[in-house]
Image 1 (cartoon, rainbow, N blue to C red):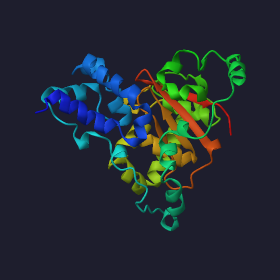
Image 2: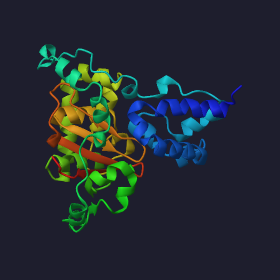
Image 3: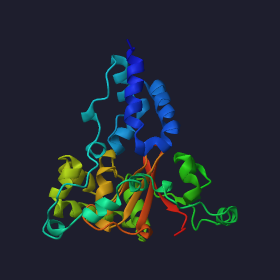
Image 4: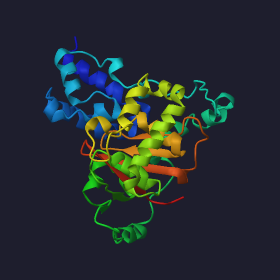
Length: 300
């Protein structure tokens, strides 16, 4: 009979090693198991960042399951990972009732699924070495900008590195995610209050649509967007994915890519025709508590 640890490892591997994650599996699975061993059940050491930002069991939760020999319960996984379907018919007062998703669904089948989840698996190639040398000589315009060769670079999967041109930091005040989005939209990062307001309005106008995505937590997501002052914000006001990933992609009609050391996600608009690749925004989650914005190499 298999012991509980072996059963836990097999269950965890089954969860992580899906077809869409196999490119990063070898690198991330061993790292995650090692983190479970180091963290144990101590929430202070764990930080629970994966639970907070991505809705997946964090290291201390997995350690508890391993101790008691339990499998990972389905309800501990955010609905985003359990309901990857665009087949529901959404209706709103503007356009969804008459919209036909059939062409978009066909385009996303088969080999397109991998491109949706991992943009770096497309046919886009890294530029020649000469161009890389030119990029490394580029000087940042102000002190908060970082070359992709500097520390933030290490927070993202190795396979992504050839496609990163620059990683740009923003002020770390609890509004960093919204600052990064504002900068990527071509505004200054000080426009972060406008991003919060627009995302809240988007949810309010399409509550039925987002109720299917947020798993009946629309109100809590809206509460995280509403603030009482323009200063630093607590953790309950941070920008959290996957919930707000859908809203950002839909409100601004963009493809949003989220990068981190262990988990990468891509979001498309829910009620609009998917935009072109030129409308791709990329953000990165580092150190378990901070967002930056990422510039990919322009090879279109």
